[in-house]
Length: 271
Image (tube, rainbow, N blue to C red; front, side):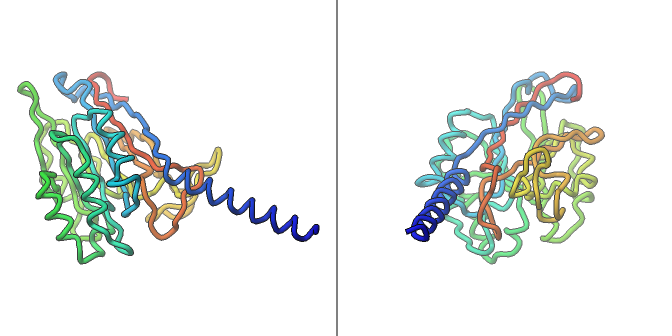
């Protein structure tokens, strides 16, 4: 009887752990970050961007409704997708495109690639689907947003796994406007220093987050990564790292719920 009780307790504990892991990996948090700079034109004071990163073909409700309902309720001025929208190990382009389909009409979407896009032969299908839906795909390109006579620039670079030197591409796109860079890998911050604001993903928040320590492991950085999540100001560049939404090789997040980031621009002193 004792042995049966122990077995039952162990099974119950395992079931509860599985439930907790599943819930924590599906419950999306919204992190709000304010970026303040004197370089931001007054016309863009209060301009909001919702950042999506590292979906990795995860599914959040039918047609990605858990994600799109949050974004639509925030009524952002723009959406930025910072790579790994698909997963090269289990590529499902439709799951990514469903997310775009669920966004309210009129929200401009800007997209740059991650390393997983470079590893699948279905990237062209994804790119076509994004372009057909009006998404601005930035592969070493720039888009200028104008508002009441003032401008800011959004530029995007391909993940280095596509080839090419990131800093050279950025140099060719800088134009003097307040510049937002969409780049997948935060560990390459030294190459992004020409941009004013950089939005990254890739680190998955360190996958497992320990109290007082932070993320345990991130691709490209190894154990206890320096750039795993949140806002960092390095020189004249503000770096924002999304913990992302999905998982890839390691299937679970622990103490690290999926994240959407809401960025609000405000003019003033640099912080």
